[in-house]
Length: 155
Image 1 (spheres, rainbow, N blue to C red):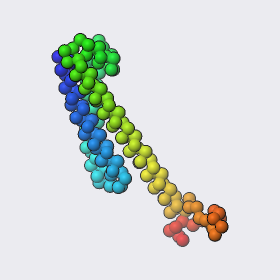
Image 2 (cartoon, helix red, strand yellow):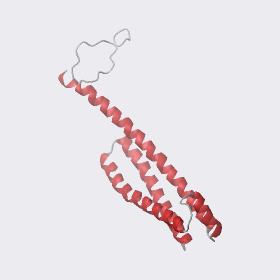
Image 3 (spheres, helix red, strand yellow):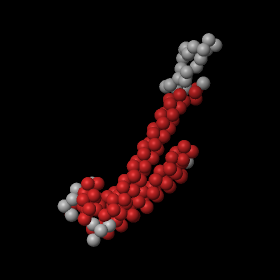
Image 4 (cartoon, one colour):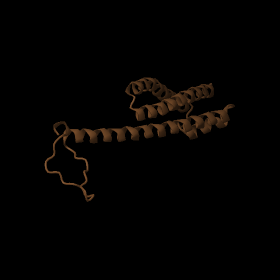
């Protein structure tokens, strides 16, 4: 009984994780294009997927704990040794773990792109406000010294 439920949760979560991975790839493209309406749509689509993965993860853990097993790969392996569908349980669990690792890597990649974009935007705003001065070079190729700094809006 518990094995069948776990298998169903694994299969459902694999489909969910595949959809999440596709959304993370779409998000990366939208971030690069700075397509804010598309990013909002992706965020709206991602939220229920993340909630579902979280809820199913808790359910899987609870099922293993109810069987007096640890809620990790070792507990799943112990269950697989005594279940008729054991090899399939392990295979689906490993497939889900691999997919979730790919989702995490894609999420980290997207986070790096967001931070780089924020730094670039902050730098541009600093230049426009007059707080930061871009490097200007003189005829000798050295950094020119600019006497008085003025924001570009007042130049």
